[in-house]
Length: 330
Image 1 (cartoon, rainbow, N blue to C red):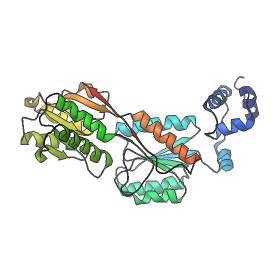
Image 2: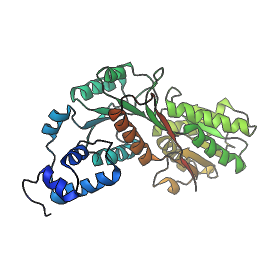
Image 3: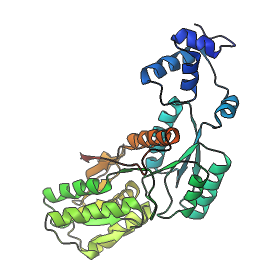
Image 4: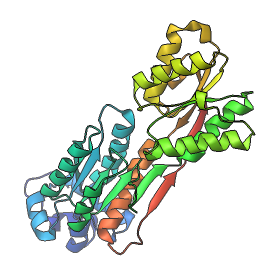
């Protein structure tokens, strides 16, 4: 059937060999439809150029088929890669995404939560700005399910998708130790934030497992940004210029460390293990090992979990998924 004007659901049903009710369920994102049938109907919808009337669909289903994504910043590749994974799933299920930025500010975050409510989103995927967020309960009070990504909220049991931070940190530090390190310095972040807390725990576990003592002089907590990585590296090397291995918990602080080391070539033999693989990771002069987070999988898992929660309110609560990263050696 060629693309024509005035294509109806009956036309789609006839072409796909299914009932009009089945076509309607596919259009409305009903998860009870088999994947094979869904793909067949979706193919026919594309071939015929059929376009869903979102206003009419919302009136019938009492849903907007819109999902809100709330992130603390957009400049971080982590958040945008996760958003791409989310959008990939939601688009195929007939949902559109509405993305807002809290600028890492809890006050702004609360305002953005209210905006999502005003936009009548069917659900939300949230990367919290901080470790607290009592205003998130207003979403649940309005019957809007949500899934947390990357960070948990203190004192609240919520659906969430995270990397196995402890395991990733352990593997990176272990690689340093197996390469001969007797001391491994650490650059982390706010221990109230889930990734920073858990990656520090993984670092400590690896050091303890191999009988290495923690040295407070070689442990520095930054703010996850480039400048703090620069300053922490300087402070560590001023305390102990003999350090040969350094573990850093994210890409931005690792960039700051590389910047400092580029200005101080006398530390040319220092090697860095870090979280957050990127296309430029292997280009760093001091690259030793990097934990690659499954960014797209985090996004797709969060989106599928949210859709399941939307369709099945009685799903056991909470659902927390921890995905394993990959240690890449350089």
